[in-house]
Length: 123
Image 1: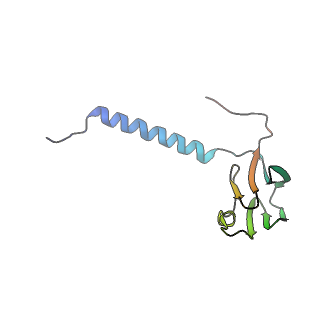
Image 2: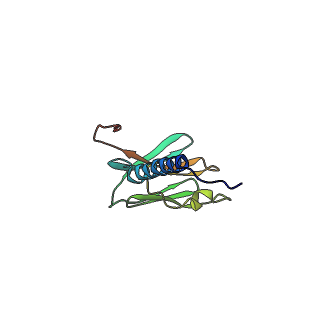
Image 3: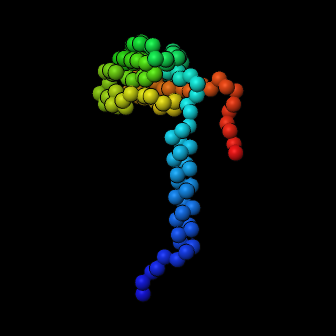
């Protein structure tokens, strides 16, 4: 006995593809906010918060960690810990990304702030 696709199967496949495309488009065009900030935390304390612009060029040194802020990007450039997971995280470019160094309890994360006053748009 052969299984044949019926009209209803094509409708279900089409609906799933349309929903997947809409989700992909929403995630691709989602704005992280008007301003992008790099936050450096150590031992659950905010050490520094720097607005990232095209002109940003800053190096922050903490106990064993070196954080480089360049343009609208941030990265843990160096760490004296054994595993180097925070360094291998790479360059952070979008709000919500983070690099964590567990041995030194250092967190570098990017935060987006929207100044338009609009939290969300629902249609």
